[in-house]
Length: 207
Image (cartoon, rainbow, N blue to C red; front, top):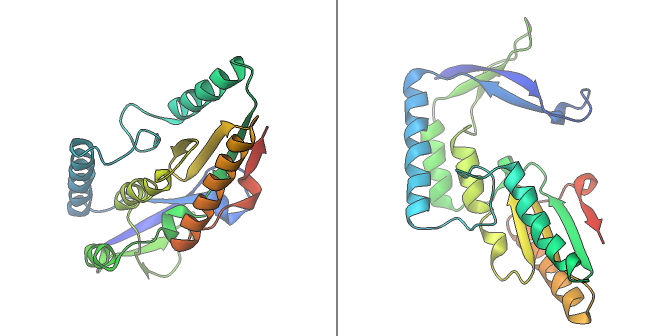
């Protein structure tokens, strides 16, 4: 199966190639398979309640808006009580292409994408055909499952929009500060174990 991919600008500096996302159209049978995956995986995850409430991306009824409102409301509630809070905004670098997967999942994806090829098309110039190594449907679903793990053992409030993560907690007591630092250390260790990196330019701390 072959398809043409065209770059779509996201945000930031237009001269930065990393600010573009490739978009392509695929053949009908490939699209049908991806739609089956898109319907089956979320239904299974919902019935088994696999995905935690902290994830707002790729989730029915949730969005960037709910991500911001829910997290902000929790932090404002602390401030209204006279508490001091710390908010840390984290972003994983190219999470769609670097998520750690076990051998079985990698083999399944490899078989699904076997024989697929793609080339970049910008107006008239076209690149050579290259094997396809990721799927526009499978990728976000696997990322959603993968980003479920950072919640394990969390002491503070976490809110996630795909790979964008916000961590917030009360910081007006020594215990609160220690809990925030423990969560940050735990997130760093999780990232190292799963070959993930943080985008330093998009990480922020608000006190």
